[in-house]
Image (cartoon, rainbow, N blue to C red; front, top):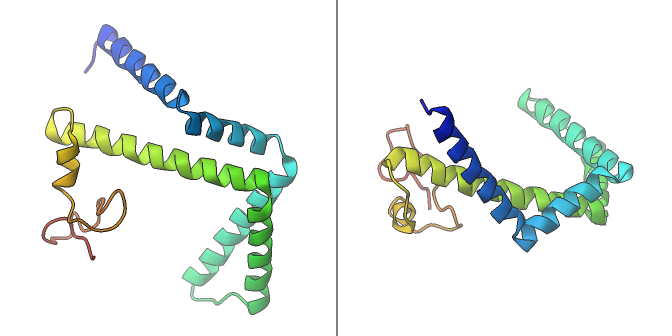
Length: 153
């Protein structure tokens, strides 16, 4: 367990990381896009409707039901409308950037705990089979008794 001074040091470094992220123009822009989205009730309503309907259609499919052609067509039309809205599109782009950063940061911290030291680029390369994508194989196959990384490429 960390004592109070150690905890404060970790939190200070975490705040430094947060500031370093905010200092990156794409992250600052993403934050502005999120703020613009939150201030736009029309864009939020479009997004919330698509998310809710998408979840309902997914649940329907998981229970063995098939969405009707009209239901699918209306969903696709409304999704296209959402993607055509510049504020909503900006929010979706910002969300994608933030999720990617979150994943990369978590990946590094997880590797730190796994190795007991600051991970290097080689630590991530050695776990990869050279497949497509910047994360290559991620956690695919772990825990399933598959050899290597478990990639299917």
